[in-house]
Amino acid sequence: MVDILISGILGHMGRNVLELARADEEVNPVCGVDLKAGEACGVPVYAGFDGVREHVDVVIDFSSAANLSNVLAFAERAGAAVILAATGYTEAQLCEIAEASKRVPVFKTANLSVGINLLQKLVKEAAAFLGEAFDIEIVEKHHNLKKDAPSGTALMLAESADEAFAGTKEFVYGRHGMVGAREKREIGIHAVRGGTIVGEHEVMFAGEDEILTLSHSARSKKVFAAGAIAAAKFMKGKPAGRYDMQDVLR
Image (cartoon, rainbow, N blue to C red):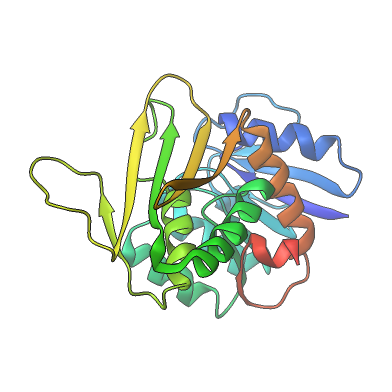
C-alpha cells in the first residue's frame, strides 16, 4: 500500500487524483494540503505542510510552481518521494529540483499521460529515421486559462526530436512578419489557447510531397491523474534521484 499526500487536493486535478486513489486498492490517500483547507473532501486537509502528522510515502503535487520549495522541504523531512505535476517552473526552480533530487526521489515529467510519453518515444524514432529531409513543426492546443506557453509537453516533444540531431536544432516559437524562408535547423513550436481544450499535441514531419503527423488528444484530465497514481506506485521506496514517466513505462 502506498500512502499518498495530495498537494493541491481541492483543485480540479487534486480531486481527480483523490477519486482515482480511493478506487485503487494499492493506494491510500491519507491527507492533503491546500490553501482552501477546511473544505470537506473525506480526508484531512491542511493549509500547510507543517500541520501534516500522517505517514506519507509519496507526495503528489498538483498545486503550483510557487509551492515548490515547500513541497521539496516536506518530502525531505518526511523521507517521502515527490511527484511534481505542476507547470511553469523557472530556471532557478529547475536547479532547485536538481539539487533536491540528490537527497530525495523526485519524479518530474512535462506530462503524466501514458499516451503522451509513448508519443515522445515515437517522435524521437521518427526524427531519427526521417532525418533532415523532413521539417518538424509542433502545434499544441490548451484551454483559455492556461498561463504558460508553449506547454511543457510541446517542449518535451521538441527536445525528443532534437535528440535525434544531437541537440543542433533551433526552437522557433511561432512566426510573424517577413521571417524569410524556413531554415533546416528549425523546429517550429506553436501555441493555441481557447475554450476548454484539455490538451492536444501534434508533431508534423513535412517532407517533399508527403506529411507524417503524430498526435495525441486528452479528452479528460483524468488521464493525468491516472498517470500520477501509476507514478506514485512506482516511486514508493525509490532511492534519491531523478525519475520520469519513461522509467515507469520501462
